[in-house]
Length: 166
Image (tube, rainbow, N blue to C red; front, side, top):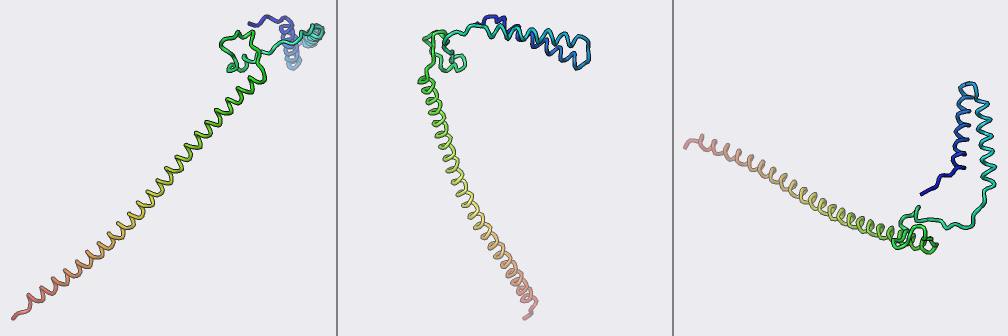
């Protein structure tokens, strides 16, 4: 849990006072100059105090807070230090997962391509069969029309024969 940082509080307070002073100045309200002076003097004092703060030696970074996958279940968060080797191993695992995903995607695309080729072959066969059926139907219609003409001609001849008297 984070502790309350008094300097951070005063940084924010000084910035808020300066923003309110700018608002007063834009609107032409009284007291803008006084607010600017208070805010800027306060910020200057805070900067002076923070500049005199002691610097602590090396503090280990807690990378597991930013990257939870680096956290070990056995260790306490406070005692875990992430090494470059551990980060590289995690990165290599992620790259391997990406490669496996790409291989799976490639296989899926190949399967889709094969299915599309089979579908194209079936459509071509259907088209050929349709053309054959259509051609046969046209031939059938021609034969039927020819047969109608021949039957009509035979009927005419039969009528002539019936009209012929012996």
